[in-house]
Amino acid sequence: MLGNLNIRVIADYFPALWQGFLNTLMLSGLGFAGAMILGIIACALTIQPLRWLRAPAIAYVDCIRATPLLAQLYFLYFGLPRLGILLPEIVIGIIALALNSGAYVAEIIRSGILAIPRGQFEASMSSGFTYLQRMRFIILPQAIRPTISPLIGQAIVLVKDSSLLSLISVVELARVGQQIALDRFMPVEGLAATAAGFLIIYYLLKALAGFWSRFDRVPGRS
Amino acid sequence: MIRFQGLNKWFGSALHVLKDINLDVAKGEVVVVCGPSGSGKSTLIRCVNGLEPFQEGKLVVDGTDLSAKNAALRELRMEVGFVFQQFNLYPHKTALENVTLAPIHVRGLSKAEATERGKALLAKVGLADRMNNYPSQLSGGQQQRVAIARSLCMQPKIMLFDEPTSALDPEMINEVLDVMVSLAKEGMTMMVVTHEMGFARKVAHRVVFMDQGAIVESGEPASFFGNPTHDRTRDFLSKVLHH
Ligand SMILES: Nc1ncnc2c1ncn2[C@@H]1O[C@H](COP(=O)(O)OP(=O)(O)OP(=O)(O)O)[C@@H](O)[C@H]1O
Ligand SMILES: [Mg+2]
Image (cartoon, rainbow over all chains, first blue to last red; front, side, top):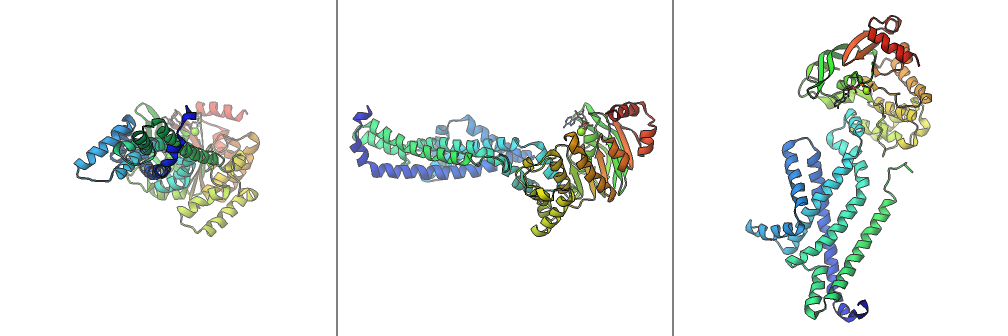
């Protein structure tokens, strides 16, 4: 079947595909940056002792994890205008991606912090560090390391999820693929081009994970 | 310096872990706390720097009333060093960084001052040549000495030790005890949970025996070891002194 692939169509659409590829990168990059910020904040709130700050953070993580991204996307797409908030589709898409992955990022970082032995908290507390100093100097540097690989994994998921934004007519890789299918009635060519784009991003992230794993250890430990 | 008055603590509603504790530790005094496993020694000593809250009674440490709701715990902890059974060094920091981190960020020393002080202390505990090693590159005895230096670098008024040699191989126990002995001789106020009765004999001003959450007996080492009055103390001593 691949032998029958109409390469010319793909070549014709190359500029559009390239644009889609760049857009996917941009959407995913911004989405993941937002997810990291949201995730770190949500995680910080879920592990601190004040109940009234903790409850909303836990509710956020639960709601996101319990519902499909598609529902979240439509919820924002149709819900925000009702609240009088009119944003371009692409911004809504990025917000949806960030909100969605943010919950997973929060869980990943939380598991990293929970893996830190109690003694580290007790020792740093006994030395008189404030809560924020303990987090900054002692807990987070140890907690972040083992979370890098799962975070890259979450980034890979986010890149794939960004294809859903084609449903609210954001122009990205999947959308361009659909365009090829619709304009030229060549769905296989469209899908193959889309898939190739995603595969490239996947391998970039995988290489990053591999590169990181060489440093993924406590200094001094062989 | 440290005064327990009728202190009671429960874990949950059922476990009465500290029972009517009354104990005074004067400035410069070295008090050794011993007793069977589960008798509440760790819990007792952890109350002193606020790692464990308690429900009843009063505990005043260096003028800070720990029973007060808004006790200035952080300020108190700057004056009270704590050495753990499991060392609890920061694994991502070198020995020197472990020692200087709190002086820089909690005491506000300059990096140069803290480094100078830290190097002197590491030299004092016999680790002048291991300052740039990470904890994982050090033996247990060395790690515990770094942990002691880490506490001392804050220039505390009180040092608390919770079984500092229990996690060590026998041949490393003395190197840690030696550091503690010299500290005691310099006049540091110390509370030490340990089963090292040799240490107690040598430097303790007082030995306290705990059983089932209560202080059963306390006295100067000579009388405590010479003629313990309680059966449970005698029983315990015969067990720890026989090996
Ligand atoms: N966080 C906790 N929650 C509930 N129970 C606890 C907790 N910490 C300790 N205990 C219980 O309190 C009692 C006293 O514990 P503690 O650690 O103070 O004893 P210990 O004298 O230090 O014993 P060891 O010699 O084994 O260290 C034990 O029965 C223990 O199981
Ligand atoms: Mg104990």
